[in-house]
Length: 373
Image (cartoon, rainbow, N blue to C red; front, side):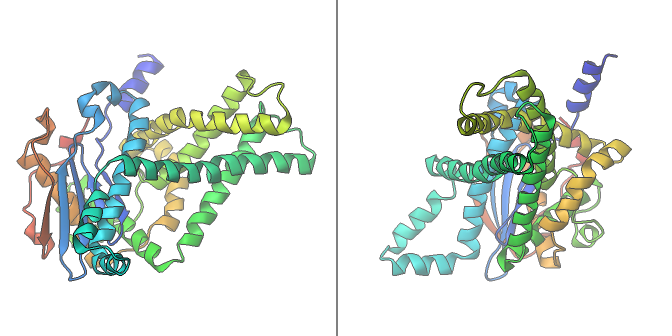
């Protein structure tokens, strides 16, 4: 069997996307065909916002191809994340947000309409994504590139754009900025709570992957780290970008003949375009590492990302674990009850429900094997 065939088999038998994201006082969880946000309300209940997930890959199977699915995942995750964060803020901080809106002269009806508008994917969502991506590109692409060029000039090193050294130093600076950023925001009390829910999300997924009952007691046994975490994904983004940028800039004379400053601006802009294949490749790597998590090479590749998760996760309490487990139980329940895997159109509409405890969600017979692509 040739190498390409082996790689194809490896990436085509990964776990389907059962993953999530920590939000304000809650967890967003997405299975292949269901989407749930679970939030702890001020009165102590767990509010679930549940819906069918009918993404582009469901409508256009072409997007399920390796590399392409990673790019699509990045875009969809950002859109889902923004909507989920807005929803969780509206639930957990409703009284505070309403008071501010009324103080500014809005009516209660206007406040409720505006709140609902932020809880769906629309033009405003993509505008917010554009602003966020612009900030991220400035901080993690243009700034490291500029600092690398300045550092090379200061040290008297001939770090040309076509050299591996330039992109290696660029990657190190990028990683340092990311780590410093995460470390600093970790001191904020609200962010620390989000990091606790991040740990709860990982624990709940680990319980499911271990084929154990989804209970708080079982979740406590697992670490807050997970090999398929978005933090690990960002680490792979940096490593893959170093390799890809070095290869491409060696072959393609980007900005050749232009003044030095303009050449670096063009090169940094070209890196932004290359981030799409970088994201696709990084996604395939993290999927492979997640599937073969017990293999020595997978553990070695995942180790730096797992270490980074010490900054982005905290040990959750029982109440936070309840919320995370409610979210994963809900997506599994929806998958099984409505047979969403075989649905070729939307059969489930958005619905909200309040739970008093984790036991309010019926157990189901879903197992990890049911979510293999």
